[in-house]
Image 1 (cartoon, rainbow, N blue to C red):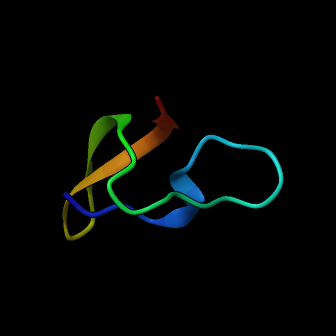
Image 2: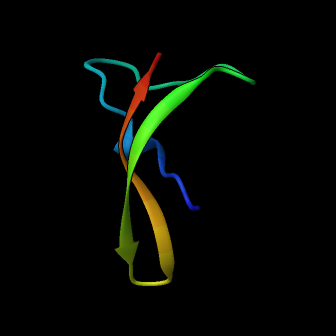
Length: 41
C-alpha cells in the first residue's frame, strides 16, 4: 500500500516516526492501492 505524506491527517507539519502505529483507509489510486486519511494512534 502506497502512503504519501499529504494523506496524513494532521494540522501543521505532517510526519510519522519509524514504527509508529497508524490507522488508515485504503483506496484505489492511479497506480494501485494507496492509504488515505492516515491517523496516528
